Length: 125
Image: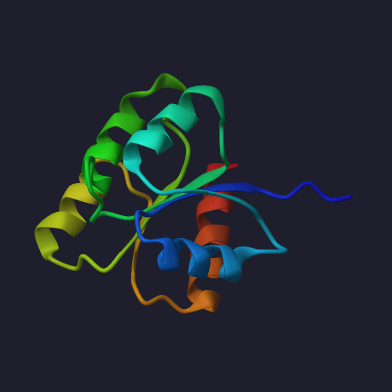
């Protein structure tokens, strides 16, 4: 049995999470979480191969979550792809400055998502 890459998908919109899971099922092992706070708790005990992170979330947004992820010793090298409808230039730049590996706008094309995930995983090897 092949070992699937583990992807942590973080989005507070249940429809978005379901869409991501549907797009990735079969090829990856997806853990869906609905908040940045839960994602940070998860990352204290688990090490995914890649993180898909929404920006607009209640309590702790994706930019703040990314900042905290990059401060965690065990998470500095995990590729993070921002997957969001937030397209303003300042948010995009801040995400990259904090260490995001890529930025995908919603709604996404499944093929595009797969290609960017593969590219990020290949770079991180």
